[in-house]
Amino acid sequence: MHWFLILAVGLLLVAMVLGFWRLARGPTVVDRILAFDAVVLCAVGLTVVLSRVWHTDFYLELILIISSLGFFGTVAFVLFLQRALPYGGENDHPAGKEGADE
Image: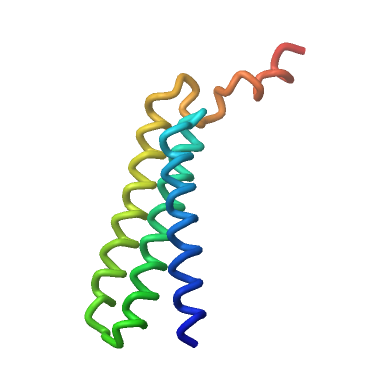
């Protein structure tokens, strides 16, 4: 069981590093948002595994806080992009107007 926890921590750290790499490289804003969400998910998983290794329930509140902050951060990014992008994610997208010209 101990080797499984070490393997889980290692894989989560590798996934977190890859998420940070994608967060820095981009190429689009949507990629960065998804990378941020993946990093938060890895942080939650790492906290769960470390809580299990240290045999404590103290970190359950921390898990809830980290996951809530990640969720609200992702929602805030999406709402910001919806207002900042030219089409805003509504029906006035240029691809949706193809049938209107005919």
